[in-house]
Length: 241
Image 1 (tube, one colour):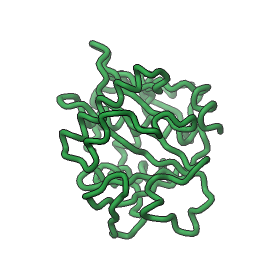
Image 2 (cartoon, helix red, strand yellow; image 1 turned 180 degrees about the horizontal axis):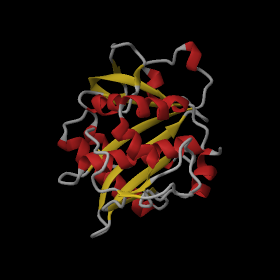
Image 3 (spheres, rainbow, N blue to C red; image 1 turned 90 degrees about the vertical axis):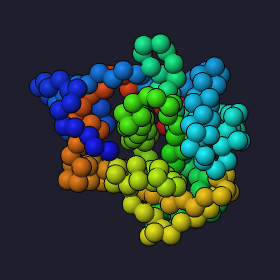
């Protein structure tokens, strides 16, 4: 992702805050946008509009079906995130965190989990979309961090992504493993393109970032982002802990 260890950061002593990391934050960074959980119908409409536009722009499979909200968007155990520009309040990014607590993850219809992962608490990151003309890498990174925080706080053991090229490269840079060892599958909800199934063990994430991509580790772990504003009560209500 090309993270800079210093750009835009304000160094400080170790910040005291309640956060689900093994290391405390030593840096704060303001973002030109805010990330929060979708809680209203109007917010969901905005998230869906960003998602639909992004999928159509990239000629993604199934894009035409995404002009309306999906049934999964309204599941009580699902979290949809929205990134909103501070300057004008415009929605510029979204992603959906979809756990396997109540039912299997979507990709499992095409690629069943290996035996050692069955019965574990998992969550699939789905429907990433970022508006055109925005600082896409930073919005994507903030949505990824918010998703990781939600998974940590709700006891998710493994985070999964089904990605086609070049989206899968983003998650490989986050140190996801290739669950299928290079094999790709076509998904029933995204026909016409082959997807990799990637997996990140939550308990190993910090160490992987620290040793393999320190710029990412700095962003995800050592930096406090007040603009990633997640309601812990809302997370607990939907996903438990």
